[in-house]
Length: 198
Image (cartoon, rainbow, N blue to C red; front, side):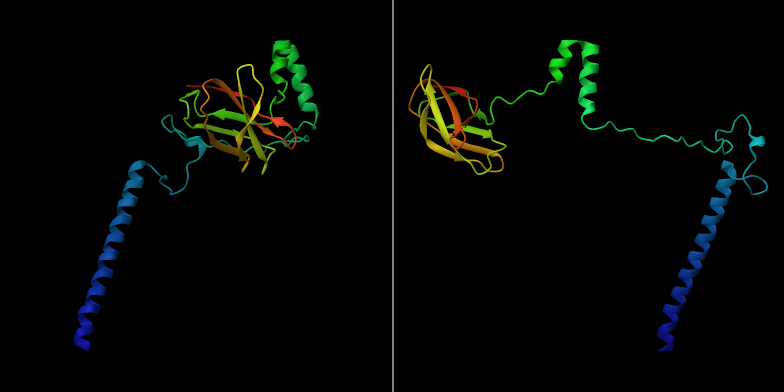
């Protein structure tokens, strides 16, 4: 048993000896490199600022305490006055044109509708999709009309989920047709989209 432990013990001793030698060599190399690069001085302490040479590139100025002001560090505008100040500054800077851009535009339609194509063949499916932010869960009726005609209900409904909706419609009618959706519970309609069929 003692004979079997000897090779293991001597292997561990050899590894420790190699680690010590490598550590000493690395420390010597680091010491030599730092002295060649000029870290530290002859006394082993940091240099005084009076010993700065023209070739030195790092200089730390003396500490001077900063004066703290008595006012707030961040100034926030009171609620409601920022839009008034913006509109008055925009009037003086750019005149009435700037004022028009600052005014928020009122949404004409509460429902936005878009079509997948502007031209389809008769009987080909047309993809309709849209956004209805305030109509979660609503059931929308699809309406169609010919040029100059009245809106007529199309036999397809679509439900709003996650503020969006989408469906496919197809018709054998030809010509320019307009499509829209309507929420009959409150009378809100989408913008019409024009599609050429045929």
